[in-house]
Length: 302
Image (cartoon, rainbow, N blue to C red):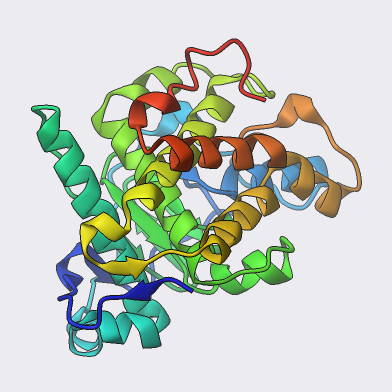
């Protein structure tokens, strides 16, 4: 398990705690969000295929959608509970704060080294549903990143579902992978990549949507390579990396389709196969170089 430096100071200003705050009115299908999630778009495709709801399918053209407010954040409790790395080792919410801090410290340094400025995003904890500038989302979407408001949205209950619904083994670094993946989308947003992806509505193993998701996996692997260097995490073991790879595999399009609909339909893929997700996280981790993550330049990403 990834251990945090007991004395490192956690920055809870990078997190908004909206749990219990509510988040607006949901449509008939339970979601109208247009952000980029680690599993959400897949789930909604399958809901439509299986007749599970009449909601609006998230659409990358809607990334600059209606400006919507969210429930008020109350960080008073989390600020009291999550002060140091010792707290991150004991409490899940504090652990996510620690991962968020580490991820953003790495990307801040990387952007600076390139002569660019990194703009911090916030991780928003919510329960049930939440309003965002991408629309209103329920917890069923899973974690997602909303480009217009530059926030990562997370219902902490997802990490239990990652095991119970998706068959992952779980673990602290499975959580880290999920957060780092969403911040990979933030890096793409700051780099202008998401603007290009938004113009392509195709699906399938070689689509822009899949290439974008696999690049986010790769960028998550890059952070993992440098996680200890950020000073928040004292050491990583092979077990930690295996937890991340297992989580990446669990949320592959083919594995989710097989579990949820009993068959695999590659033409509907939006995130990539289990093998591809593991491959690109591994590419990022082994290279430690964001330049190795150009999934848009290779003929095939599988």
